[in-house]
Length: 164
Length: 288
Ligand code: FES
Ligand code: FES
Image (tube, rainbow over all chains, first blue to last red; front, side, top):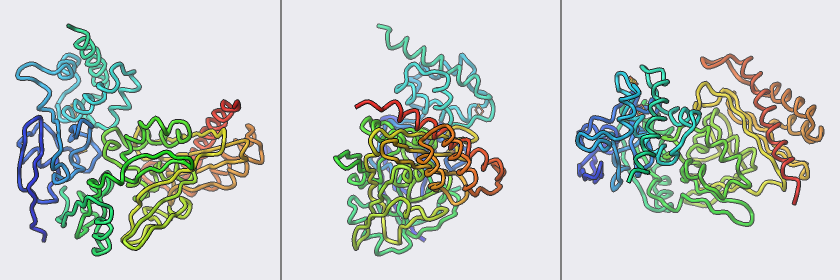
């Protein structure tokens, strides 16, 4: 019915993606199908599971609840931005070492949420961690290990900050 | 699921947005998208046009003045939650915001969007009733100021007419030495409330607001509970009477989250907790 398209420019992980898109294209689909960054997962597509969480202008947001056209001119970060080559980000190391994932479907959304959370709250209590995780569903782990992993990540990150 | 197709406009000024809404009666304004986007993804709504308000920077921002605070409708919930200037007189709003969804939804979700959507289990409409908020509404033909008590009409329904936009929210200063309380029970943190209560009290001002929400048509001031607090001079017995009045007044229905009898009961418990917190905080502010 509406075949109008808009050309948008979106910066994802420092790279500019310019595409002509329909206004009803979800940002999550833009990231996965247009930018071909499939690390951002789509679980529910109605804002409940958190799997699609990205950083939108440094703030965690659900990419299934945004239109791609709204991100014209914006700066996004996805899970692909964390590791530098083969070097894992401390969050990834912590989740690996503490078994913070099983199938891994929820993990990208959780890591992006935790990246922003730990930047704001470097020494979180367990209660704060659980509240911060409340917007991300995990069907596998029972969360226990995720909480452990976040605590470990906080320690790794502060060690990295004081290291010369 | 994917949204249906629609025409998309993202005006940079309020005037342009109002003109678009005036010319397109079925157009839907899009604020933070944390309610409308799921409805689009589910195809519960099929608007021919979306008028995106996110590029209108003049609609966002918090301005504190002599007569209270004005909160732009497009202010992100996360920005309001972190705004230190609200802590002294409007801490109730900041506390309630922590119960609104999750970090990821609050960084996009707006204060005005939640109010205009008026989900019966949302926290912010209840807070507006407790703080005697005034909604500032604009259309292509003029401005209206609507008291919160008149704004929230019923389930997902407000006093907004076609072509009107909620542009800002005015919160007056609460009476001197006021205390506030907010209590909520939800299945998980960030879920919609099964029952919640927002309370503002001031002994000197003989002032009490008791709002229950999460049940029936949405938030309601419970006048019997307010009277019980004031007449009972904010004593323990007054709290018990106020809580009982809340339990009696609310009209929950059975749904898959909880039976009606349970909600009626916990509505009273939440009211008692919020009253107790409010009265304690008020007592802590007696000097000056
Ligand atoms: S896919 Fe976006 S919240 Fe589930
Ligand atoms: S690890 Fe499988 S959903 Fe979380």
